[in-house]
Length: 153
Image (cartoon, rainbow, N blue to C red):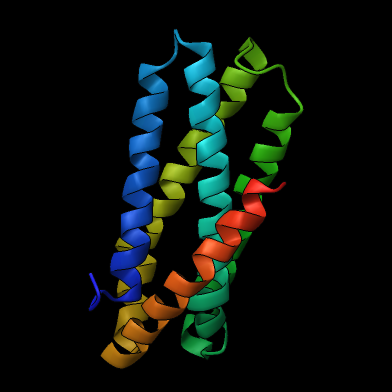
């Protein structure tokens, strides 16, 4: 996937997050497995969001026609981060945790669908193919450091 653009790369992550949700649904009766999957999701989503903000969103914020979309998505990242923080404060897999998790899942799926269906196509109209490839390269460099940071928290 050396010639992937930023949108391909971000969608790959989104697909991995969707798979984690599916695995978590399958693990409802296996608390230890569910907890490991949820921790993996937390790390993965935190690293993804940070690397996305530092690459694609930073570029979009610098362009007046794309700024509003980027600001909206950054605020949704903050919302998901707030959900994850709330979940950390609840008894894992208890009733309150499951309700909050279901809310977070719904919001996150809405966020990534919105990115893929609306924001990415809008941004693709404004960015050159070279910019899209360069952003993918920057994302690929940034994400491992963000994964390491997220794992250490």
